[in-house]
Image (cartoon, rainbow, N blue to C red; front, side):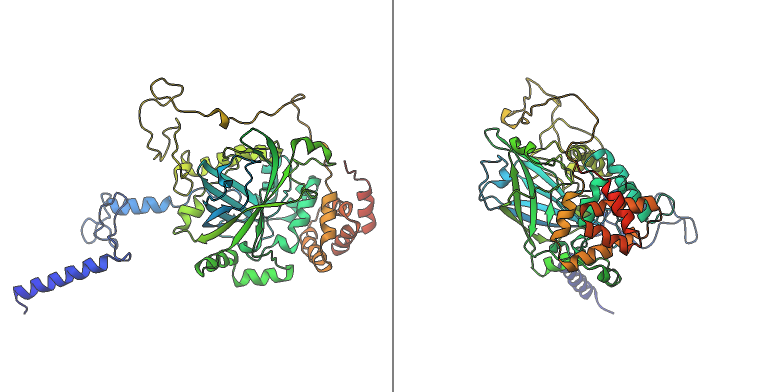
Length: 512
């Protein structure tokens, strides 16, 4: 038997070893949420060896309560997402266009980027025929700027009042829980402005093989405002330095079977290997006086500014995988209304609705204080009279929670006021003028190679051919024929439709 001296020596050695081992991240003391240590995480407290579990086992109760509440409401759209941290560096002086500090030469701005699919749920395959979300949160010295876009420069609809209907039609059926092209094309048959976006979506680029291999766009026009109050309209384009690579229709099923987390694994694998992806930021600029010079409405988000050159103004580099998926990617909250001085919204009707809807849905999903979460928190002090609410950790102090006040006046700079915009006419509820629903779809189709045209017809006809409503099917075919006769004819043949009937319907469509 060891003596007392030996026992003391052994206890000292064990204690020293524990101190050394506990210094590693794998031996930290397990605690409850209040920080108190846990003595046994394997056995519940019971009333004797065969008795009931005790309600006073607060560790058990807290553990089950927290587990029951691990899921927050899933995003209605863009639920399947992947996030990464990085930085943005401007490469051109555009102070003549905007006073936004994020573009000041020599600055480096931290960013968080969330890529996503749109219609799928959180665990759905990433290889979906779906736009890809491309959202960037800039933590600027003037507060956060949320760039909330997708991988195409256009969208399906031009008015936010149609957005809930668009999503409902493309989400799984309210009866079967399965997506149904009959529902989607029932909506699109009554939404001719979607022809351009559908044509883009069903190309090979509509199925990117990697988040690194796609571009990003803000879709809408915004306003730049310089220090003198001069306004210009601007569109943003992230151009991938890695190039754009899509998947052909015949390669998609095998890709899903091999790895339906392909895009996340590709991005995170590249980041872990030090292959940091980069995107150059380009802008197009238009003077307000030029808005009426086009035969389409430049603020219509179903259109591109095809005749306006792009200008490179900076580069974004992603360089870090988040330490915690939920804390960063899942709780990140983006809203296009989160703007900074020098950048304001345009009158684009779709954007105007998103200005409200995105922030409102984040408030529902995460609570009134979602901007206080670490991933959403600005890197500058927040001084406002907003207060209280669930999970408020804003640390507002003092009893003056209003303004104006002689006791605690908050400084305000008139140069940060919104720019004044002239208004004319009466309130109305009418469609825009100069819709031109089909022309740009045809122009895009004719830029495709022979192989890309065939792949587009193959992919689109696979879904369109499943439409059982004859009127909807022929209406859709007439839209594509109106965009380009070859395009519509090939789709008609691929879906076993009558090309002459398609042409007759297309001839009745009027571009205006």
